[in-house]
Length: 73
Image (cartoon, rainbow, N blue to C red):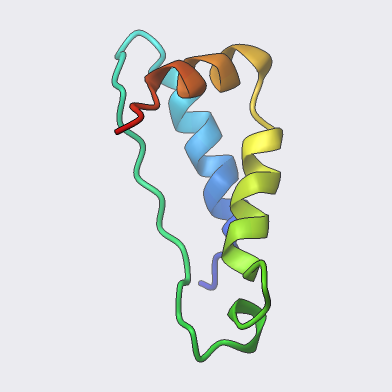
């Protein structure tokens, strides 16, 4: 079975919705960072665009929670 990144993010959103009582400030993202992939050779690589697009699809509450969890170092 060949999953697209969209399928994976749908699964992730579903998991987050089902486990909201389990609060954690960690999110793991698996992305194709392969620099030999021509879509990752642009100024803004494809993985970065897709990650941003998927972040934009989160609910306002999920976005706020994620932004609050970011630790600036």
